[in-house]
Image (cartoon, rainbow, N blue to C red; front, side, top):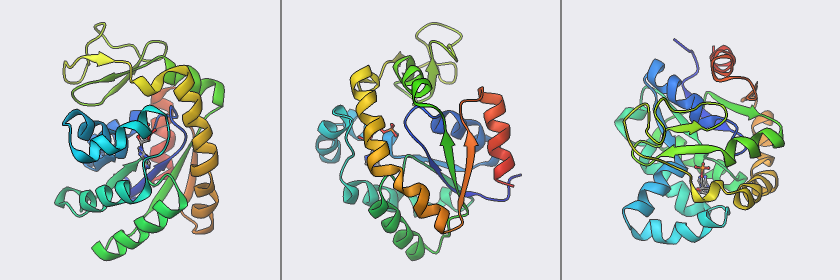
Amino acid sequence: MIKKKNLVFLGPPGAGKGTLSDPLMKAENLAHISTGDILRAEIKNGTELGKSAKSYMDAGKLVPDEIVAGMVGKRLAADDCKGGFILDGFPRTVPQAELLEKVMAEIGLDLDAVVLFDAPVELLIQRLTSRLTCRSCGASFNLLFCKPQKEGVCDSCGGELYQRSDDSLETAQNRLSVYQEQTAPLIEFYTQKGKLSKIDSSLPKDEGYAALVAVLN
Ligand code: AMP
């Protein structure tokens, strides 16, 4: 059992935040809150929120802070977050981190740790452009590093695998620039609060997972 359970996973797209969230949430019974997954579900369901988020996501830009923070606030208040949670892909800007502090204080929660997933840019591009995502459960696979057992089919739920439109080379490059400009300042923000730990996320999945568990104890 890990000691730190209220978590933020910080890092560029393709760093493996979603990939390592999956075994950790299952082993520790944590809620997994991926703002990207929530937004994709809103788009799929044709909601107003989904309609306003789509153009930003297609361009690899960030959805406005208030929209995303409101979504996360509601989600964190749910009962399944009481035993711990992983915020995957949120916050992505300093104002979002400040909104998170406010929302958590209102609910009576405290953040235990922020884990920075670190990997070289060339590897991130390679991972993003060869990534396959499950349409049903959101699980990630990779044509180069983590192939599904059966082509085009999710190992976890049997759903159809597809390439996310924002995993094209051009949009992936945009997303990495957006990360550098808008999200990387959070490294300093959380270092100053004494919450930041770093793992080498260029490691293979099993070794990356061991490194993750080690920093959460
Ligand atoms: P992800 O699945 O985390 O790679 O997110 C996919 C896209 O969803 C991002 O490129 C953004 O357009 C949007 N998104 C996800 N999380 C956030 C966030 N915290 N703030 C703003 N936009 C977000």
